[in-house]
Image 1 (cartoon, rainbow, N blue to C red):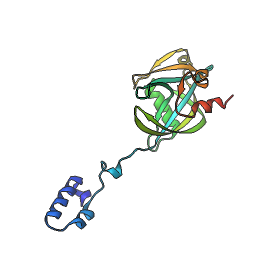
Image 2 (cartoon, rainbow, N blue to C red):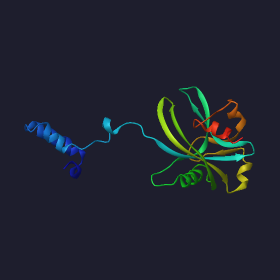
Image 3 (spheres, rainbow, N blue to C red):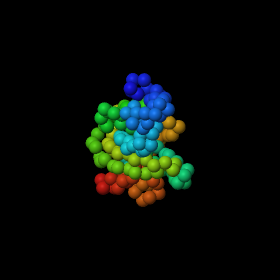
Image 4 (tube, rainbow, N blue to C red):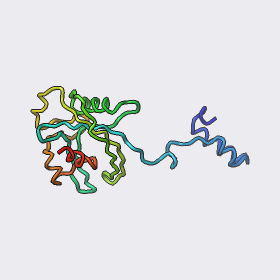
Length: 182
């Protein structure tokens, strides 16, 4: 019945049943799980697609900051994969949303699992990392590109900066994945 009249009605019914002396059995029968209950809470794994766009010995990334860790980091562009969406299609959509740019998605370079903390909150991602290239070659001439759906800017950073530890590249494992290409 809770599903017919809504969760609010179920809690009202519990009170009425308890007042009438029917007790906890009536509560168990009518109880509907609540989205905000402890059982429904918890973190989830976020699938993402990231694109490795290269310009000579550089990759296109955005710069982020975690003030809790006191850390500046870099990550390739991309984002969340929606339910029912293929990771390649998600990557194409994300580049349209972030840079208003069309890309050609290439080979799947790898899949990385990233368990992390960001600004003190736990996170868990499965990242599909693809080689990609801009359809419009003029975009490679831009040293910076404003990300349209975020206050960040995309920049070209030399791979050597990540390989030698001068800069941090996320997700975890991406620097090793790129280093294995040599």
